[in-house]
Length: 250
Ligand code: 13P
Image 1: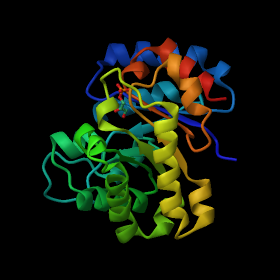
Image 2: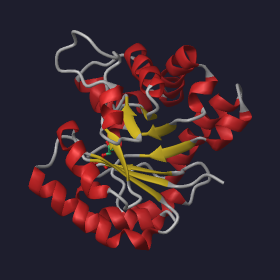
Image 3: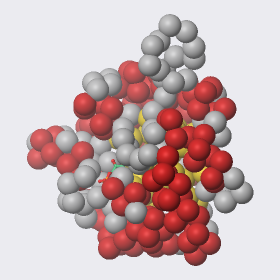
């Protein structure tokens, strides 16, 4: 049985004050979410502050990205070891905004995934197709290519302690959500791709859905067999909505 994971990706939002307010709201209400694992991913500079506020709450901390390099002359980068030192369990890797706005290649994403695991972080590997790719019948080919880049570099063992997030690019921040059936189809495809190499690892890995997930649609999405949680953007910035989504996963 896979434990549901609901993770908030705050993206480029927040201030010291709003981080305090949001986490106060979430931690106040969180006992109602039961068996679901909950994580928040603030911008790097708020990790320490958030980590202090989350102490003894059972809510995990994650970063939104990390460097593919361990240390050295890489101005502006933040290493997995640094993230780990500030109490992170998870790190989002290959978010579509990194891939499409900042040009991260499949190869760079695979290198980050490997480096994160070397430093005991659990990568949340994001995959997903654009609208053009979906309309062109390319959805499965895109997901396969993005997964295979990591499989080639880290092997199937790399997925033994990792999370996948299916985030259709056309559903991110647009208010358009994949239907539960559309999402389930892609999740099943991703799991099947891994199961060709190891059924146990494929059966155990959590595959989250991300893309305009909100309290009104979370329940139906989370009921699908292969949807094991959510990676929430906009709705994770409102304590009430985020907690309601987490509660619908139990
Ligand atoms: P929204 O929930 O705002 O669509 O964002 C999804 C996302 O990108 C989470 O990583």
